[in-house]
Amino acid sequence: MSPLIFGSMRMSEDKGDGHYWAKLLCQAYYAGINTIHSSSEYDSFPLLQKALKEVSLIDSTIVFKHIVKLAEPHFSDYEYSSNRLKEKVSNYLSIFEIDKLEAIQWMWRSNLSDQQRIDSFIKQQEQMRHDVEDLKQSGLVGSALCFPYSLEFMEKALETNIFDGFCVYRNPQELEYDRILTDCDDGTVVSIRPFSADKALIESEGVIRLLEYNFLEPAIKSTILSISSVYQLNEIKGYLNAKKNT
Image 1 (tube, rainbow, N blue to C red):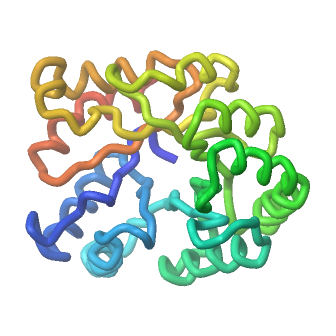
Image 2 (image 1 turned 180 degrees about the vertical axis):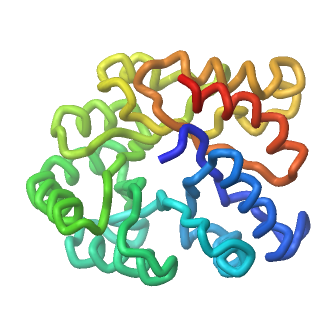
C-alpha cells in the first residue's frame, strides 16, 4: 500500500472520460501511487472500471493494489452475515480481475443507533474474527481495516483486536479520533480526507503542509486523497519523492 492512495470517489466524466482518467492513473502510478480506494457504491465506480481497462492497454506492467469500502451489514440489514461478507469480497476480486484485495475498509452500517451497532458487533465479534482470519489466510484479503463511524465504536473495535487497523477522517478540522489514535500501533491507520475538501484550507496551508501534518501522527501509514488533474499530481510529486527516500 502506497503512502498516498488514489481516491476514486470524486472521479467524474465532467472532468474527463475514461481515457483521461486512465492517463492520470498511469502518471499517478509512475509517481509512486500504487493503490486505489474505491467502492461499488460510488457513482464513479463504472468510470473507474473503464479507466482501469484502458490503463492495461496503455501499459500492461501497471498493476494497482486495491482497498475497497465494504459494508456488512448494510443499511437494509440488522445482523452480520459471513456469506454476504465473502460474496462482497468475491465480487470485488471478480470486477478487478485480481486474486487479492490489499485491504477492505469494513463498516457496520444498518439502521440502528450507534449503541445498538456496538452491541450487535460485540455479540457477533467471534464470527467476524473467524471470517476475517479466513479471508486473510486464504490470501483473498491482505488486511482488514475498520471504519468506525464513531469514537465509541472505534474503542470497542480496538478492544476486540479483530482488525489490522482503522480508516478515519483526519485533517486540521477533523481531529476527533486523535485521542484514540495514540492507542493504535504505529503504521496501522489509513486516513481519509486529508484536505477536508476545503478549498480555503488548501489555499492557506498548501497541500504539502497538510500532508506533512497528516503523517505527524505515528499511527497513520497512508492517506486517501482525490486527484483529478496532472497539475494536482505535480503538486504532490515532491512529497512522494521525499517519502520514497525515508
